[in-house]
Each structure stands twice: as C-alpha cells, then as structure tokens.
Length: 213
Image (tube, rainbow, N blue to C red):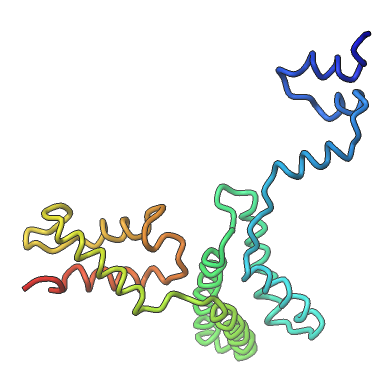
C-alpha cells in the first residue's frame, strides 16, 4: 500500500521548513496554518498609558479639544515612529519620558512667546502644558520613601562588603550604586521612578553615615 501524496511530501521535507505555498499545495487545511502561526508568537504586553492616550484621543476629537488633540496626537506619533526603531516604546516609563521631553519643549516655547509678547501663543502653550501635566500625573510613581529604603539597604550592604567602589575616605561612589540598582534584575530594574530623584537619593545615602558608628 503506497503512502498518500500529502504524507510523502511532508516526510521528504521534514528536515527543512515549509513555506505557506507548499503547505497549501500539500492539501493541509489553511485553518491549521493560521493556528500554528498565531500560537508561535506571544501577544504584546499592553501599555496602560498608551491605552489611555488612545481613549483620550477619541474623547478629545468629540469635544474638539485642540490642546489635548495636539499633545496626544504628537505623543502617539512619536510612539509609532519609535516602533520601527531599535528602541520601541513598550512601557509607561518610556511614554512618560516622551511627555517630559514635550513639556520641556513647550516650556521653552512659552518663554519665547513671553519674550515675543504673543499672548495668543502663550494661552495655547499653557493649555498644552496643562494637558501634559495631567497625563504625566496618571503614572503612579514609586514613593520616595520606598526608593530611599531600597537605596539605603544596598548602600549599607556594599559598605559592609569592604573596599570596592569607594572613595579614599571610605564613602561609596554614586555611579556604581546606580548601575547596581538599575541593572537587569536589579532591585529597581523596570520600576516606575524618577531617575533624577533616584540619583539624588543615591548621592545622599552614599555620603551619609548610616550604618557607621
């Protein structure tokens, strides 16, 4: 009894991947191909702030809120541009960084409007800055007290380990501590925090006398 043509085809090509055209010609159902392709790729992790931006965009369009439309459309456009780059936007913190950058630019433009005595532009920019501040406020950041506790624990641990990344006076250098905190798998890796605030906390704890007598 001869082997059916479909199985002969699959057996002969078992050592190399089959293209979709070959699978269709072999007589295999297209539904099974679609199931295999979809099951092999993991669904992207939803980004809460991006979802909010999309919902707010719809509401702003209905309300004809020009300031909100300008901010949200501009931010979503930046996110879409980054999608094809080596650093796609995949977290709320990345979107927050875009919003901070936008706020800085708007603040600079506001000062220019003041210098140029353009009240019309000033009003427009004030509204946009207000929208940016509102969106930034929706991201729940790690409390400073919690950050300080983690930083202090690491600093005391490193000081207790003996000489390493320390100054001649026995104090830790802030740079290596920051790297240790933020490295992949580190205690603050991927946490929603303000790195400027973290850097100041690290500096304070590195040059403090905690854990010494």
